[in-house]
Length: 131
Image 1 (cartoon, rainbow, N blue to C red):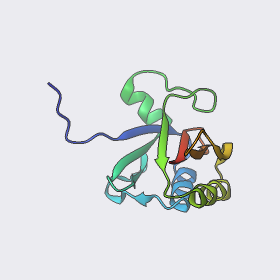
Image 2 (image 1 turned 90 degrees about the horizontal axis):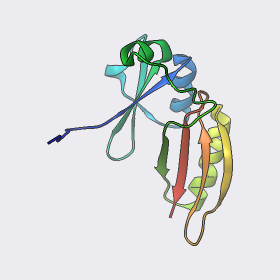
Image 3 (image 1 turned 180 degrees about the vertical axis):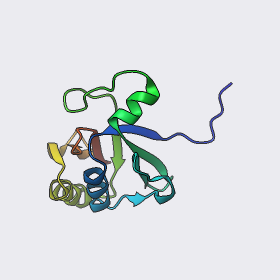
């Protein structure tokens, strides 16, 4: 039986500097011991979820297969929880200011649900949600 101690994300990007700048501007905490010339890494949220962003060719070599084009298709959508509707609205502005794309603007998703979807500069999708 699998009983992992931890799980984290490994995503492919085309430009480490651009990715580092984008997520730093959003306030993600650098995971400095794991940053190198091949990846930039961040710790996210209260549970310290680790997100590694590898150069696409590095991840492709490791996986021995093609990497999905995140500009054209979704492999995964991360959900980020917000503490209020105002925070959702503020984050949408921060995403655009940092160079991301708001895919669908802040709106109600049924009673008690409010959020938006954005893509980072490499097309990785995030759902920001308040409920």
